[in-house]
Amino acid sequence: MVSSTAVSSSVVRVQEATDPVVGAARYGAVQTLMDSLLHDVRNPLNAMAIHLEVLSEKLKAETGQVPPSQEKNLKALREQIQRVDGILRQFSDFIVTRGGTAGEVDLSDATTRALGVVAHEGRKRRATVQVAVEAGVLVRLADTSELGFFVIQALLRGFRRAEGGGSVRVTVRGEGSVAVLEVEDTGGDSAPEHADVVAALGLRCAQLGVDLHVRGGSCRLIFPRA
Image 1 (cartoon, rainbow, N blue to C red):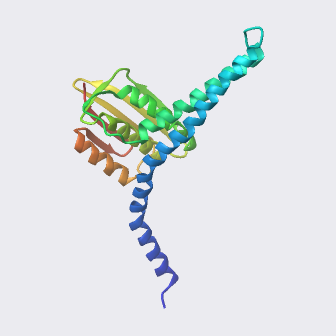
Image 2 (cartoon, rainbow, N blue to C red; image 1 turned 135 degrees about the horizontal axis):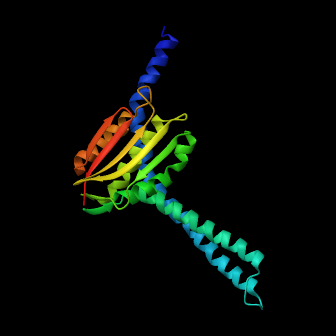
Image 3 (tube, rainbow, N blue to C red; image 1 turned 45 degrees about the vertical axis):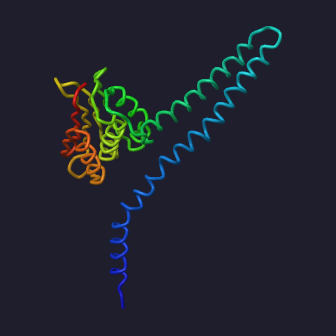
């Protein structure tokens, strides 16, 4: 007779073995889903923008101007349409892998935009975020499209470790011939560590000539400076 404890242990072992495979399959579908999302959401957004302008012309009537009360509403709708379109573009930039070429890319700009993309994650985990991003720090990569991967993974690691009211400090700075992205968290030794994230970062860093230093609450990526 097999005990319930043995069955439970077997289930846990199977789950631990299959989780990476299932996770990889889920992630593999993200790019296709993101492309579909861009198409299926931005088409209605464009239609809404066109109808908004038609409505604006009708409201002008004989005076040639939209009444002030309606103009305020129309302006708010335009802004929200642009905001949603901008958010979709940002997520697409960081999620969809398009394969880039070697060249220079702005680490400061990428980090600032990535912070906007993952802002909700920080709020959800009640993490306090401190940012010290030096402007105009350019780096050189063999694949410029992969910069977003480095930044997002480092940020998410920090947020996960700081869950429950910790703090995360994000720094971008130039140091002579190199540029540094550092994400420091207050999670401490007991904070959950995602070995798969660190392993993926290490692999991609080795492939693209980026130095990675991960120790406790510090994740530091050192890029060749452009």
